[in-house]
Length: 499
Ligand code: NAD
Image (tube, rainbow, N blue to C red; front, side):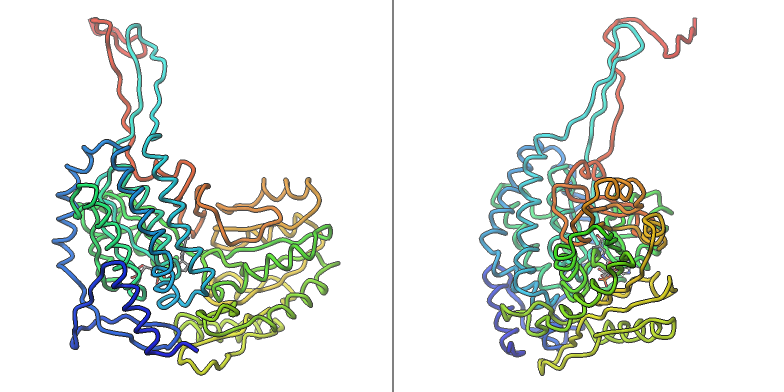
């Protein structure tokens, strides 16, 4: 069992290894906390004045944008190497602050290495286009330029990967970055910032290209309202996006929103049930239900519903819940007491709306944090409780007779992040893909565990943003269309004659 003192020791060791020295402070209003012990680990300094830090990144932009993209790529290559070297230390911090089990924490750090690889390749592929002009002796071209300063606001549940998706890509695109991490994961942020600043300096660039702002939402609001921040990339709840989106738009800034999910998997009568059940146990219970892509809804064909529910109930009841540093544990703590209260309220509401609940009880691990067993809720019909994202391991089950009915249920929530279908029938899979309104839609793969190669993000109240691979880099750049006249004559478009 990992004690409070073990957590403090591990955190200090990891921070020292990556080059962060924590000043001794007794009267700081901020502190690092772990959901494992449910206690504060040590006080933290908020760092420099936020407006001045935003100014430093803004001032660094003019120099950084002049650095050729492939040379910027070298910084990200070095960052990827540093992250690899410190994979264990970073994973320790992810487990300490977000409560992720070891394998998931290591996986999250691996995702950082992967996006650095992708961004390094990208640094030689920020392709524009040329188009034929309608005028003789003219050429049209589109070129991509950096937007300027990118403000990154991130959530507690992916304390390092989401930062790296934004930062690795933003940096090769020629932007500077100011990061406001979740107030719950400041140690992860201090470690990542130390590594990127080291990579910048070792490659001969200013550390001001990346700045860190620790603090709560009031610090995030400074980024949101500051006209020097050209793009605000904000990851978190839909409630946060509803505040951030309009405020950034009011000053004609750009925002990239990655918000809450409410993800469903359809299981058809033809599905391979072994495959479906194993995949869904991870999707629904992994990270203790605290992923944006967590499976929150199961839409199962009536003929196999009892069988699938029986298997899921058995799996949920036997999942090892406990210390995330123990290699046998599969379900770690919830982030806070508040999260457990939200889960309990959602289960109460589900019961009132006709649901039958199995699991969902608190588990006493004796470690101080809050642990729960994943819950399965069978509902006779669509219910109000299903429409909101409760950030905890609750899987709502609805049954259907006809695939169109299942797809209607799949799309009948305000969020649109991820979804999936389990089927052996290709026509069913194709009908699902064509109709699903989510940014991510999988076949024989459940809702969570995306790779960095594809664009990541969702529709509707998930915010519409795209990050990570594919052509998501375009969101971090501005497009310029140029007409070049090498004819020596004036020629107006559309054949206009102006004398
Ligand atoms: P949260 O919305 O409480 O906080 C996220 C971040 O936003 C924090 O850094 C917070 O300080 C900041 N913030 C909150 N209100 C703000 C405001 N008005 N202005 C500026 N900054 C503000 O979310 P959380 O509890 O940390 O994370 C869980 C949520 O994040 C879930 O809804 C989950 O689905 C979502 N999430 C989405 C994705 C995605 O890619 N779609 C990824 C991870 C998490």
